[in-house]
Length: 443
Image 1: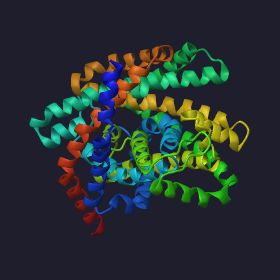
Image 2: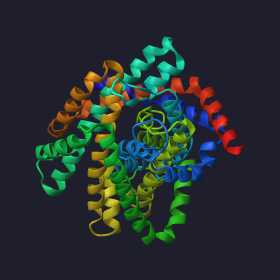
Image 3: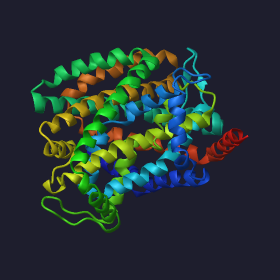
């Protein structure tokens, strides 16, 4: 079974998928005339000015972004970046930057469509995302595609953001502090349950203060390491760009990497980290209190900017500056080694970061899964889903999850296919709404 799923996973996340994800982002970037790059300062201004939001919706535009970031900023920012650099060399970071720049257009289009085609359920809560903009935007002939996305999304979360995340936290705490895995699972169950059972407003409330705190704290600590090695930063950037164009030579335990390896792992881990094109983030943005799809799209694209161009870049620079790649270590252990080499106790930053990032991923993805279940089964399934989500957390800490992770990772790729098809077909709508919005702004 595992061999079969590995084969499917290799196809699902193979070159065709990476080209489709990058190609969609590039097509949207060109169609939008690079508005997603040109309007970054305006988007930050919009985010800061519109903290409460105006119009229909359940949560503020700021809270919608923090909710999507709570699910996006996760172990991929610590372990994923390290894995990309360990397998693809320093050049992988360059391709993560490129992925983010085109991914901003994808994330923008997702949020525009999510707000434009959202609807209210029978409890008055706003629901949106790929399943709704496929059904409401493309018509009844595409309902099967909307249902496929919802099915993949409702199942993928249990692996991507629930059991595997709790398992990662329990392993870190058991290794570093001797905390029993089940004890970690039970504590996480209580904490996550206290948030998730309160619905989107409580999730958004917690995310709105926890996400900025943890992201800023992590970036601040990484900035300290960078400042300590400030004279080496220009050379590190040259190394990153050179490795992306020419490959990286072997050194110590590091086996070197080709240009293709840098591109492959940089793109794959970049997309895994910022989720641009996977269709998860627009589910949160659909709940935003706004009547302007374009404004929410501008705020949504900042998620990719913050996640990859800021947080992932910090991790990558710390790894390159501290020269730990030759160690041959991989994943979170590599990032931990880099911080520990920079200053005593630096590895504790990574441990704390992993715990916080995993927690927020669990609460953010719970809402994604819930909205997918509501689409498939109706609002009666909300409470059973939330209870099942919470109960699965301690189970994840005490069982072997390699197969679960593999299945979830494959389902995650299957989520992207319906979403990308919808974005390409609805791109004329996105382009038109964008033109109309900026024409009104110019008048």
